[in-house]
Length: 295
Image (tube, rainbow, N blue to C red; front, side):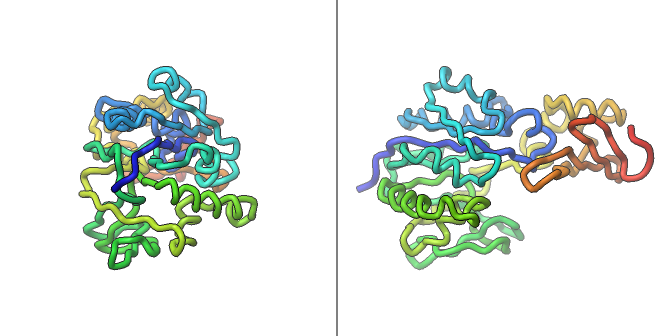
């Protein structure tokens, strides 16, 4: 007999700095992908399965998510520590709602609906990397319970997609998190890191999916491979400004990555155009070639 799903928590507090420069203008979860807003597609998939109690935890650019409360009847919480802590603080913000709960990332794209009204047991979704990957690759026992991870691997199953926690798992995880929350070493941890330190007590199974069923877009270059419109028009004012200054199309601007002012704060974006490297600074709006005069 399975667990009847009580609700879903969607995590949307983070910066998504790797998705520079668009994430400087709007949260990645609010991008339109193949005609649908990423987070709205996920909300509709939950609602289709009768999961109508949805808790959205925001932080970065929280005001841009506010319309979802009236549109879908969401409960919206604010993570007050999103600037100083990793995503374990988002889980902590939603602690009063954790029961038989889906834990979702706001920017995942599910080709087919992965949600169910009733779930057999707690699990973490995973997809298979046929070649080399830098993702968190799972180790499992003979019963498919997760026992650990390795960072990177070849031909491995790696963590990606939705997670389901039973009420008992939620209770045990929160008990551990509350004990460790104020420790200095916890601040930078993902909730997954906290979990992986306690797999003897916290039992999650792997749930395997085909690679083309779950997508996560870490960079604009990755999204361009999935949605062709982003090759020519991303809707980003910064990308339009870069294309105009360089007299090129947006698609000619590649290898986009954040220029970090600090580990959690992007000062601009690094990119390539015609085999030359450039920097764009958000505050000054300057384009600086690797060599030569500022544009």
